[in-house]
Image 1 (cartoon, rainbow, N blue to C red):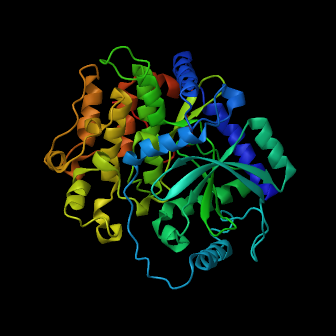
Image 2: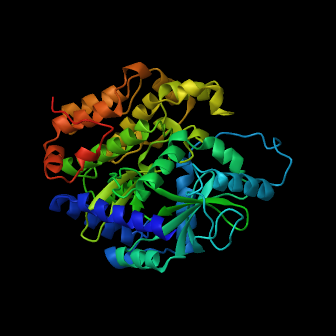
Length: 443
């Protein structure tokens, strides 16, 4: 445990080097953080570092969860009668098998009790619930590691934790069928990298899932580093400050940075054969630093095979399958629907959120609108959006999935058209030499 976390600390110290930003980006993130603090966002973390409010009244949390329900992902249905054993006993059986597998044993650990395979990593205190989705709840968490050096590192660097707890009755073997193969494969490779005498720096454009753990009450959970807020919340907080409606929530430079970072995160996931299936601003986390600098991280990809997307963020081919009721029972019945190209379509909708502050079609639903989207209708892009960005959105929103670009192509489109991004790359704010899954080229 101690050696593994020491390697983690080494890499995270290296990661901090490439978080640089301009004063303008810092000002935007800093003012947004202050605005969010006044709005009691439940996503805020590390109040001592950022002067943010980390805890909110229970009633406010309930209201925000209620408001978020319209944006919950649509989930796969499972046959509840497929296993006769009780859930807790079956979950522990599956968890012990994961701990015994050499390719996954380092990732699946326990807190507060030992198993026949591994000793406990330490103690885990579950705090207040601050968010909820269709299949899981998010809690503040306090970890006391077995190794005192790891606790000191957490204190020194202000690292805090959240726990994504799957709801009571959720079967781990069902969750296991939802995990993208690339996620566990990457975990195996990353632990091998940490043990190397010369570990390689891995740039982060996605939210790291640190541990998978089985709670003593039989619920499965993912332990993740706490971030400050999600991108949708940041957008909403910025939109409240606008006195006019003919501009987006961010400056041109900041919007380009966000689009670039999300594209990099998605490009990395796709390089690991991970299809997200539910990309939207609320599934992008924003890491805010003490000096107001920020970083966008793609999140909520760890159980993607069990997700069939959200509303009109979904590509037309998926909407058509939903209309025909051929997608909701088991996504494995229609695997060709959930492709990298469908992620590209949703990325276009996420960029629309960044550029306009609005949800696609202002959140309106209905069969008529769904039919129109399937037929080619797309959100109206404001005139203040530059022509090359119009082209990017248009390419993402092609009806035929085969005509949509890859994320590598979009990364290059942004890089070749944005002076701001080229400046950041030249200033080494992005460690492009470590991005072995992509090449940056100027057209």
